[in-house]
Image (cartoon, rainbow, N blue to C red; front, side, top):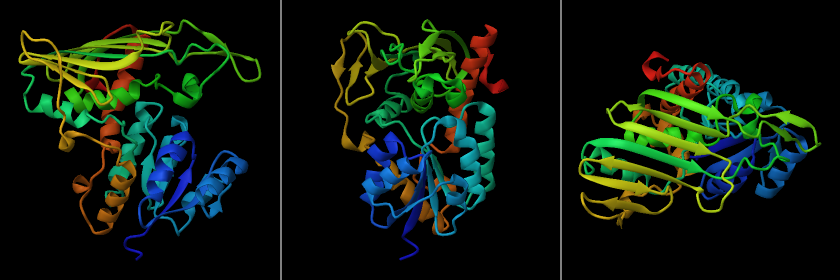
Length: 351
């Protein structure tokens, strides 16, 4: 039935779309991917062939303008997110946008304003696939750790080491103020422990020049090392270490540690949460299924679209993060950028 069928167009069907979103949608009855538009027709045609998508569009404006589509998935790099998502919403279509919301706070505000102007439409950003995020947030918000005193985030890998490879995330014209995976973890930290009140950031780019695929030198102005310190709105202090230049095989990995007055929690962003009561050592927590967050991204979006058709209010649709949450973590991204540029602490409420 038309009331249940959701017809979808894809713009920029890259690796995550091919690996996650398109297979996820294919498993949902009535979620019909109708058309795809990539940077080249050959690329779009390859995706269409792989996933049996009926049509290929050469121009994303034409795809958005089609009156037979209900929703658009935007999988491009951040530099196109604002222009495309605003166009999608203004065309009366539901909008799904890839993980890094926008290149800067101003563009995020424009996306948020478009969403607010169209409350009947669903807006969603791809969330982080962290299985135990709900459990950790529950432990904090239910007071199981007591009063939070310190939060430390460690995101370290060797992703930026190759001097003969320039990733799009290292190009400011594509990423803007986004730095490595900092924006993704900004969303997650907001969910777990709340937003920053004030922060200071320092950045470094030790490998300042790389070679592109044609051997040409490219100046790298996206930081490869970032430290962030600050105070959360709760009053707890926070410290973050982000680096893509780990040379060794031991220090890499992602982990958040939350120290509270009634216990300490350590999470590896996978399926392992450890807890330590006062005076005790860490023990692996038993995370029940109801407090796990499996990957249900595509069904969450489709269910929200169907709910919107029934007149369900935006706050009651099962999607997160939406553009409201995205705007909150983009304030942090902007604050990190401003603090690093000025050498001063930045109050997020002033942004």
